Length: 116
Image (cartoon, rainbow, N blue to C red; front, top):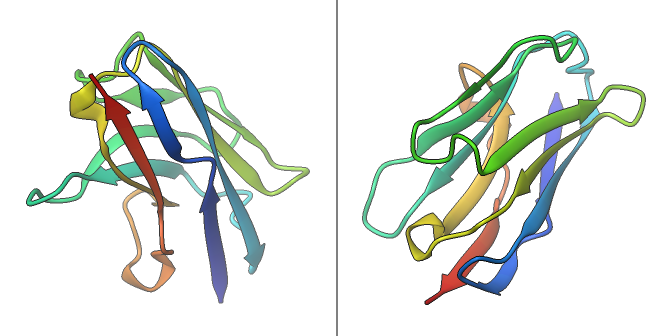
C-alpha cells in the first residue's frame, strides 16, 4: 500500500510562485513514473506534469510548459512541482500519483488558488 500526501498549496496572486510537495510512504514508488495532476472546479482531473523514475524524462501539458517544473528526490521519497508565473486558470486541487494513475493511490490533494 502507498500513501501519497500533497502539501504546499495556498492562495497566491497572479504572477506568483508556489512549490508543491508529494511525500510518499508505504510501498516504494522509487522506480515508478510519477505525475502531478490537477482538477479545477467543474472539470475533469488532468495530468500537468510527469517524470521518469530517474528524472531523465519529463513531460508537461502545454498549458504549464515553461512555467512549471517537476522534480523528485528518491532518497526522500518526495516529488515536487515548482510553479512559477501562476495564472488564475491554474486554480485547482493538485494531486500526485503514479502516471498512469492508480485509483487507490489518490490522496486528498492540495488546493492552489490564484487570484487576479
